[in-house]
Image 1 (cartoon, one colour):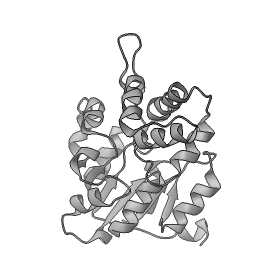
Image 2 (spheres, rainbow, N blue to C red):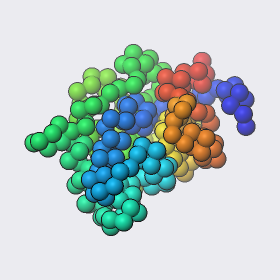
Image 3 (cartoon, rainbow, N blue to C red):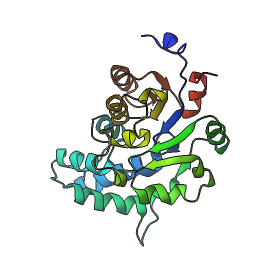
Image 4 (cartoon, rainbow, N blue to C red):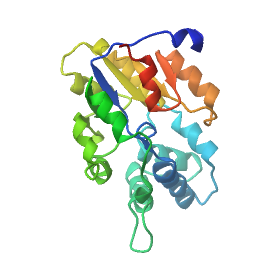
Length: 237
């Protein structure tokens, strides 16, 4: 189906569920940078952001610790999940010698937009972040009060791509009354398995754009957005 035809579709949800990273917050200088630095540190090899996106495109790699463990192992340095996590967190949270990349957090959605949505819809978050990672940024942001439920990786037995977080938020309600907005393959898989309509964030010019676009469409994305605020053009009056 062509994008021009898809754009005519109007959604009439009661519930809007958002991923955080790449949707509400720019993670290029936080999680992405930490992943690159972790892989370089553990493998001793130079890797690029193009390499990063090839690994991020693989199912099960919404979890950056699992992704970096698999990536470093593939580079010839067998690495466990716990080893990858320990190394990653030094770059993300920082050490006595250097500040962490977490301080580069930057919202790409406005407070005004969140307030506008909150007046018409239930707002929820389903993220691959830990509760600590979520709290560091959102506890300081007064507009986080508009999200009725926040499901982190600490709140479900199975993280993405499992649909557990979406199922928890819906609490038995009709999945068709919700929309989930995410930016990677695991978000799309979780939405598909929870039977929740999925809107994909995919900026023009992003690494692997054509392949990612094809994958989102194959997994049933009802629309492709370059940023979260474009959701407005899809929402029925």
